[in-house]
Length: 351
Image (cartoon, rainbow, N blue to C red; front, side, top):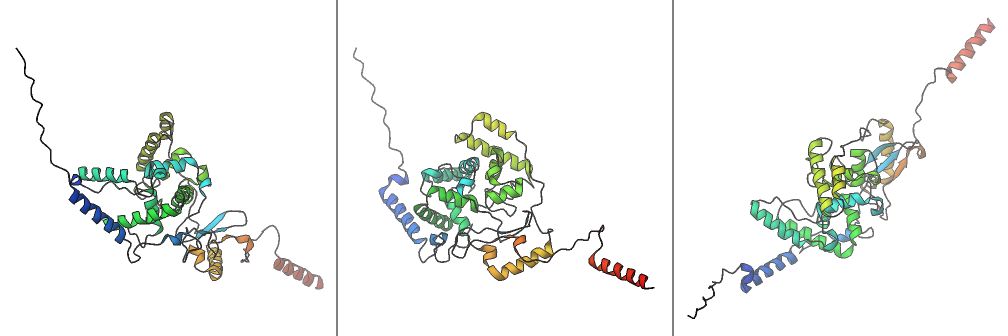
């Protein structure tokens, strides 16, 4: 008996996705390209020429002017944003790794826009029916932070397109290490700190070069929500978020599992030193500020470093004329007291 093979199952073609429809695909591509090209029309996007010192209105990073006492103590900082700019070589590797693992794990592999991250964010937002997950790269964040007037923080498509356009332009004109250096010196880390050096001083009372891995992860936890994860006001949240950052560093191969376990157990130790200098010789500091303001003007508070106008001054109070504070040594008579005593002696002798 000859068996007749069963016919193969009939598969009906499924519905075609919009991307498989040539007409729809061309329309979407055309609209996307039009939005991309027109978003910066009419000079609606900032020019990155302002990042160059020699550019018109050059806008490199603003850092505070610092006043030091004769013994080397920092007694005041003058500026709209508390920042000390460091070259990338002075920012330790764990700090760089912590921020890359947290904010942009493919930083060295994209050209300003991480398309894989965009797809992941869209998928997550569709599943959760929210806009909870962002997709800004480090370069896009830098564009937003360097040009806050032109690129707002509104959650709109126009703002994202501007951010992306400027990010691509920055990537085309600056090497990756320069972009990372600009970002780590610019980012808002809460408590008035802008950049990792100022944040290291405010939270830990040390230079960025001295931060350990746990402290580096604590700073990298802040850009998402600086006030919410402030280690001084919300230490438990800060530690939880820090430990998430350490896990991300492990996932990127920056740390081993044993190292993560070690640093996750590290206590949060914040500095108890004063970070505001208003009570240190306030009258003299104000007098000196007036003198410097007359000499440097606006550059005293927001002068760009490396510009032709010069960096904001770092002033030692021992190098400026200043009122001399008088202290009385009770063990020795003053000149007036000696004069008065000698006169009384003469008068007594004359009698």
